[in-house]
Length: 128
Length: 314
Image: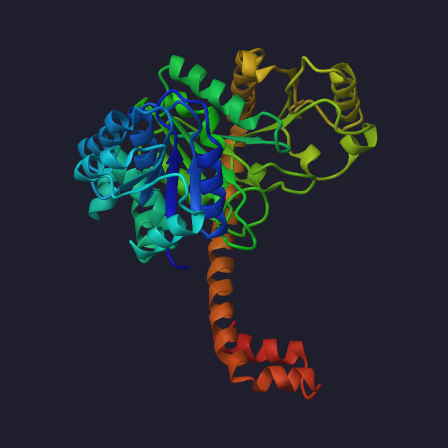
């Protein structure tokens, strides 16, 4: 059996809008990935710990509260501290274009903003 | 000893997670890892939580984790959800109810896709439990996929099986049917704040009252729970404890575990044969001759199969 790609989808922060996260989760499921869904209002600590236990290749973060600049890099940092720098992080949500370079510099591999199709996310994962 | 096995035994979280991936993907080294870990297993107590979809299994597991952590026990959870028969993908969502324990170093939660295996678990769930066992987890909880009437595999894989059911799933004949209703060591009637709970409990009680038993039979208790409000969870844990005491008496636990080992050996043989048969058939049938011969009635499926089996010299 070819190794399954496992992806953790999480919503850090306090906003309660998980439609986007669920939409992506379903698209990833249909693309043949195993998606570990962790639900709303997760701390970066809980997300990173879950990613390590689940041994995922990717963590997808969705944030619509505006706190992405602190929450996303924190997850990357925690993964490093937990000896899991190889677990890759991507993000999505309402994220201003100006913030994207900073997030990428902090180790977030890719950012998907409103208007991105789920196929773009699937293609990105398959290519990287 | 190989490095991964050593790190697993020392309790390293990343290595435990990696080890489960290795056996889940049936990677090279999977059998070797399990061989090395085997003599470090046998300390953990295995509990199965099964029942219909949406019955509250994950919520109950969440509360059980909390309770066992209060007793300073290390808890491992293997939560299985179904894989898509179409894409092979899965949404593994049992963690949603358990995330409060994610940062507790004494809790390890792993979601598994069933990956085409029927019966309520994944093919590698028992081997994943061996990894957690060797890593020093005291209690290992198997949470099955949401089950129907016939998924009884978990009962043969754990020490105590808890069937989580809810009021309103059918009449007394449903309760009488063979299959999952037979495997419970404990019945947990969840959502007991809902209408119909009395009837549900009475029907389960009637089922047990017509069961043939003698003094050595364990009578499965029927408990009422509202897991989300933590009602009845302590009683459930205490019922698990009583069942464990029952198994400890008269070497029942030893016998149960020996039977399990026999079935594990059986499964390893079956799985390897299955792999062999698939590979062999793909090679042969792609050449087309056999398939065409079969279709044209020049030969028959038994003759073809017997020719393959001769290669195995069994």
